[in-house]
Image (cartoon, rainbow, N blue to C red; front, side):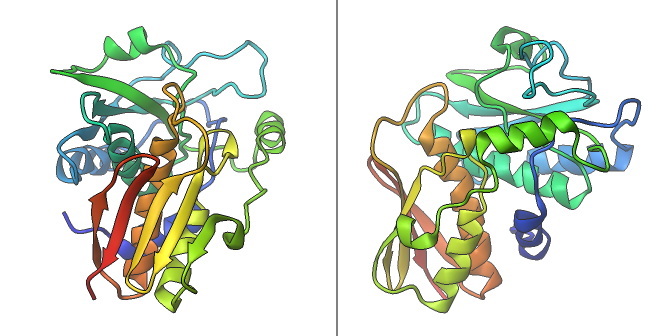
Length: 262
């Protein structure tokens, strides 16, 4: 399917992680149908997909009782799945899963990437995995409370979610062209585990390379998954500027290069 650039690019800057949802407010049937259609139609990489689960994630998400990080009230959730035998699996999952996140945002639903604190055995009871597939992350789905709850505000403060690195700290190479500035601003807005923002960008006049910062990629919270999320944001920013392109995946710590084609 073609990227819905207008609605998803707008959602990039509107999206906020939500952990408190309105109890007793189910996801509407037409919203479920749209997300389930997307799960079939949005498969940019054969190695990554997501499934919608129409039940509360209470048995799936774990957290300390009373913790500010606990998620509550969500009527449904989605599961992000990738083929673990692929070296780029986490990036594929990040890119694909963020498509779900942005579509849910455009539909008025709240979401929150959860890539570590979930019960894998409980998730696997609710989805069918094949071959070398494994679950990389989940997200609750539902209507967020109108105002951020006290625990959500605490989580934002603890995670430093309002603290975004300036682009100069993340970018090297040639001076960015106008389309690259728009692409990088969209990538800068991407969510990441603990708001660590591990992506770094290298520019040439016709390309942007995404890599993770120094250190190991990690297994529980892979940096390449965060970079995959940023990749979709980056492409949406480029396309919103009228510049199409394609991705070439690279060896670590590089992740992929977006080559402009128009």
